[in-house]
Length: 230
Image (cartoon, rainbow, N blue to C red):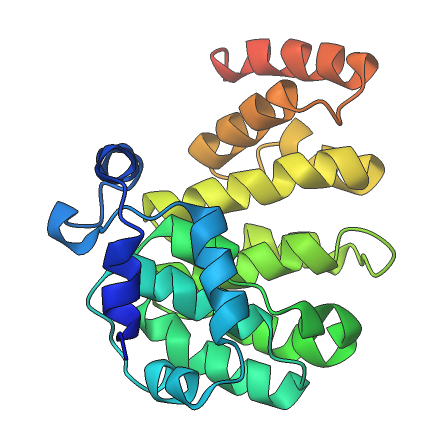
């Protein structure tokens, strides 16, 4: 029987490997096999629930980037909330790139957002780059619609980090908040309540978004002109 690692190498695309490496400067090229995401998801569907997977999920850290992504896609298929949460928490310390971080999202979390809020806040308070980013991603994914509360903006703004991939996620969060909760989010970018870098990136991403109305974009462009004056 082929091992999971052997099956990943059987799906290798050398051209895609080079492309992936350019997108992820934090990951050494020798860790990237070069497997396209649809193929990884198909493999996760095929392997889900097998004894082989149970052993694989317990083998942390993995050697290859694709093993990490496959791990994340397998976690997405877990139907029990407590099991999914425990598996995510075991996995988070080993995540070393934005792509694995942003694509690991168990579907069961959507049905337990009340319970998920405490882990989200704990992840945001972590000192690990991708654990913080993951918490911010969950806050953005599940708590900017019907379950939104203005204090969540304070949680995101309160993240103190000089790590690029954390600051960019804070900016992405506020850009999304401008689209989904514009009245609550606008004061955070209209006044210098965020760091200058995060504020500028949030406005930039909002201007690039199709979810922001033309009127909002006009106001954001006017706001952006004031940044260099302050």
